Image 1 (cartoon, helix red, strand yellow):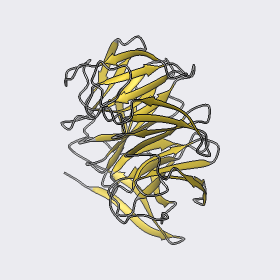
Image 2 (cartoon, rainbow, N blue to C red):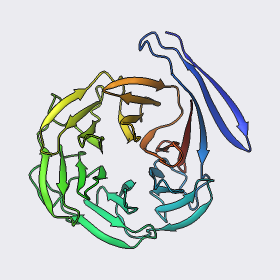
Image 3 (cartoon, helix red, strand yellow):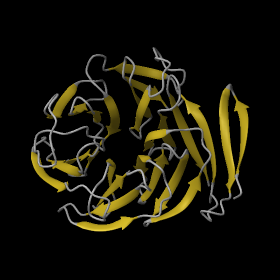
Length: 312
C-alpha cells in the first residue's frame, strides 16, 4: 500500500499541514483537492492540559466560531482571525458534548450526562431546555434522553435530537420544545436500525441524514421526516465516524476520530478522502460564510481546533 504524502511547514508561528496527495491501493482513492490545515484559537484559556478539553465547534456563518470545552468557561467565542471575543457557561453543564448554531442564530448545547439539550442566545442567555435533568430515558421516552449526541434545527424551527449513545433514535420536537415523534428507536446494524447515532443533518430535499457510528465501519442513513427509512450509504471505510457537517449543496463531511481522516460524501458516495491526520475529529462544522471546515480534536492535550481550507 502506498502512503500519504504530507508537507509540514511553519507559517506565522503555527503549524500548517498541506496535504498534496493520498494514494491508497486499498481504497483506490486520491484527494480531488488540496487542503490547508491550521490550528485555530490556541492556546485556550484555563485549559486542563488533558485530552478532550475541546469537544465541539460551531460557526454562525457571520464571523463567529464557537468552541465547546470541558474546561471553564466551557463556551469560547472567537472571530475568524482566532481572537477570543466572549466566553460563558461556567457551572451550567454536567458533561459538555456538542454545540451547534441554528439558522436563526441561536446556540444549542448538548449536556450528555446531564441528559439535557439547551438553547441559548449568542451571549449565553438560556431560552429553552429539553429533557429531564439527571434522568435517563429509553427508546420510548418523550421527555428524557440517554446521553444525546447532536441537535439539528429545521427551516420551520422543528428540533431534531440525535439520542444515540445509549438509545437508538432521533427525537423530533416543535420549535417550542414539545414532543412530536420518535424516528427509529430500534437497536441494530441492519439498514433502518440505529446502533450509535452521533450526528444528524437535513438535506435540501428535507431528508434526515444520520451518521450512525458503530465501530465496525460507520454508515450514513437517510430517513424522511415521517420516520420512514429510505436508504443507507455504506462503504465509507471509517473506524469511528464522529464529526459530521454539510454544505449548501448536500455535500457531507465526516471526521473519523480513531482513523485520523476526513472524508467527503456526495450522493451517497465518498468523493474525497484525506488521511494521516494527527487529529481526533470528534465534532465538525462548516462556516457557510467562508466554506472553511473546523474540527474539534479530542485527542490533543489542552484541546485543539483545526481549520481546514479546501484549495479548489
